[in-house]
Image (cartoon, rainbow, N blue to C red; front, side, top):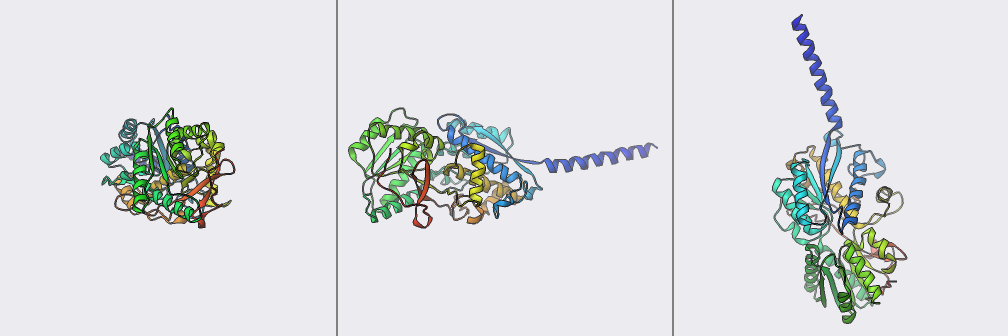
Length: 417
């Protein structure tokens, strides 16, 4: 009797263990860390990044067959991990490189995330990814364009976005085409903040133009989160450049546009380096007095019913705002990261790293207008690409260059208000 009783207990225990195992497989989550500025002067960008990732989580964790060939959309959860759901732990870097570093360390050591994404500002991505590198955790970035991020010999850092050199070449080629059409583009001024992002992008633009035989006529640097930019705008007004390339985060971009209006200064052409000029807060605050601003982008909504239009609608319902290029690039990076985890069939960081290295996504598998996603030995997406958009007829950007991708023709000179 005693033997039968023990046997019965063992059988019951094994059944309960089996049931628990089945339940844990069903309830299993993959935990990913996301480091963004959820407070401070760049909070609008961080909050919209959070909306973008939450939209992506909906697509990944629930079945969305209407998205066609889009990876992760057909099944609910990750098929490679038995239907496991994705969970994201968000951390606020407060716009500080030191805080971004500390928050990344917390996500790795306390939250036990298997991979990371972020961190919007290049200077914070620099410090946050260094911690991920130290701990051997994959870090996929979708929106920081400072050239040096992929020049550090890192093995765990991957970047999906085009970088400063790609966009500098786009600016040069666009201005070359505009000049051929009769627009004066000889004298180019750069206006940039003194962060890692601002100084590195300005340097790359200067070098790319120089390599193509054109010098930068004026370089104006200013302190980030400025409270007064009248002297910088007056300098532009005095020098009268044909083109002003603006490299600024949202609060500074808004201040520059308001100051230009106050001082009645309208450069013939403004080209923005995405960032603050793409942020929804910029459009709301100064869109109506910034008509004709050119900007760089890799995002286009696409025709109604297309996967991109469906995703844009989902994002707008969640955020209340139209999808902008920065949020789109952040979402794309998150999809690339989770696709690699799914293909790895594991939460082992080394296996995720190997899957990221083997990534080879085609244009119809992407929500952004890249030629694909394929990483080189430095972790840079060699198939990233972009286009020029312009703020026309209200508060919406439209694609204007190159011609095959254009929705409308570019309009010059800059209208402003």
